[in-house]
Amino acid sequence: MAVLGSLKTFQGGHYFGLFEGTPRGRRLSNAPLPKRVTIFLRQGFSAEVAPLVQVGDRVKTGQVIGVNEPNPQRPSTPVHATISGRVTVIEKQPHPLDGQPTLAVTIESDGKDEWQFLQRPAPNYERLSAEELGKILYDAGVTSGGQAGFPTAFATAYGLPERMRYLLINAIETEPYFEATDQLLYEEFDKFINGIKILRQALGNVQVHIGLGYNKPRIYEELITRLEYYDWCTVHQLLPKYPQGEDAVLTRTLIDLLVPKGGYVTDIQCVVQDVQHCVAAYEAVVEGKPFVERVISVAGSAVKEPKNLRVRIGTPIAELLDNNICSKAARIVLGSVLHGRDQQNLDLPALKDTPAVVALKEAEAELMPVAGPGFDRDSFTGAYVSLPWLKIKRANTSLNGNERACVRCGYCLDVCPQNLFPAMLGEYCANHLVSDALNIDLMACIECGLCAYVCPSKIPLLEQIREGKRHALEEVST
Image (tube, rainbow, N blue to C red):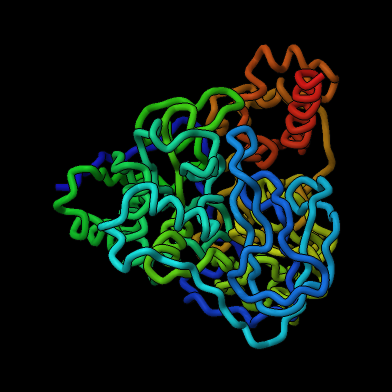
């Protein structure tokens, strides 16, 4: 039968409350078909692929518009059209995640949404070989999942499929506002379970470890019931503490293995996939559907009606927020409010790895600034206890104060999941002492952003550390 793991956690981290504008319990609904999509030819972990279409070409939903030849040094996965229509622009644009110029294809919708489905060799996936399943997952673009990709024979990850020993399933969500993947787990549970079986079979029947929040007893009981006779699966209950879902933290919590500094989970023979990619694997293999849409939470204190949506990849942020955002909105983030980058251009599109679009209000003037976060705001220090009837936290664009000198409070040490010294790392990086920062494990930082979140001096530690990493990589490359 399935093995039941004990309740697990990790050192550091932080428990987040329910923030204002969180779409808690909202069922998934389909976003309107976009009038136009911009599809970057670098999605997920992958390298940029070469376009297969030209301006003026007509395409169908699910048609491959970009692909590379297999290359173990630069793994990639095919990119698909997410609507049917005509290609109007192919040009370099700043990528939403890092600002690097990346080739993007713009498609104007014809309103028909005509599909081009995958060719499947057999209706019963249990009869397929690992190579056949890997081919379908590759053709569907599902192999772009995770921080290191999904290994197949087509060079789709930073590792080889025959070297993998573990498949870890991230079914716990600890980020503020990220509710869509949790809702997907409830609404598509059958697809989730069968998607796990497909991914395992594609890796040659490895051991599976599922990490699930202990606050989801109904899902836990159903998992145990459905996987009762599978001895290759272990179900772990985890404390819902951020950043439990990060690859480096999840592998350490579930199987007690450490990801090398600056490396990937594939370096320790692991593959990590989340709920979205398990469901996408099922839809690709059983339904012949390419990975052209994902679930996204549209949330935040500046959103009038928070929602969990199924969204076509490439849909502009502006269409997701259309008529659903307050005039006071001053900060819009594509992804995590803790470590994501603010977006000023609302024409930027949703990507394969965009779990949320968050809009936050302008900061409010505080009557008593000396009181810090106040009674109804999230306080890491706990110096000001939230009143019991004010359970919803208020997040805005401000850190409630200007940057000051480090006071050596040690809060960043308390929350760091990698057991680092973020204050010192930030100081070294800010003063261009990259070699000193490397000596105290700069590259082990997973950029979760907790250090900057809890810092009472409002030091931009995450930005400093990212800049230090960039300089370190530049020195290595030269």
